[in-house]
Image (cartoon, each protein chain N blue to C red):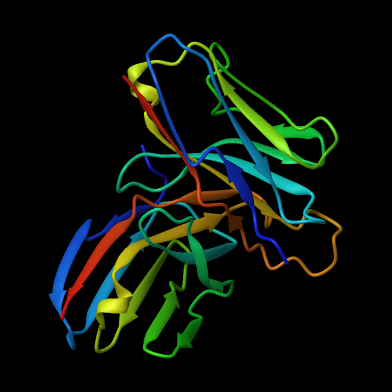
Length: 118
Length: 111
């Protein structure tokens, strides 16, 4: 069974340019997360979806970040315009959602998209 | 400000040594998880602890959840180079779908 798939793995852009990241979660997982991880630090939640609904986006900088999960499956995270401080790894994770049988709470992560803003 | 603080931040030891990593908070968690992350990869779940005082063992790794469910520890016996990585604790307060990650402990085990 395929795991969480993210693309691109690496992206280098100049500041003020837009960038988008894509995530395909594990088939059947209703809950999808986007995390930001700085080097050597723990992941910080940006947004959490239950199906197509964003149920927690309190940490998403909405002036420049946006996300969507239109059909409740794959998701896109966009930054426009990017700033130097946005350089980080953007991790996508998925898990079983409420009502999806026995939920152990395990998060399954993709390999991440490493963004470098010059 | 991180809800969960891990210590130490960095740890470099020789193969065969024992070590303990701590995860502390002033908040109570309904469950706590430990993940291990290798460079260029996403974190992978090691264990979930749910009950205060619970102890779980996974081969050479021993995990403990504090009685008050505010802290946890990870003890590795006879560390091996393959244990090298970033160890992350993650606490859940409301339900199984909202996690707060700790600041991480970067472990390097030298052969």
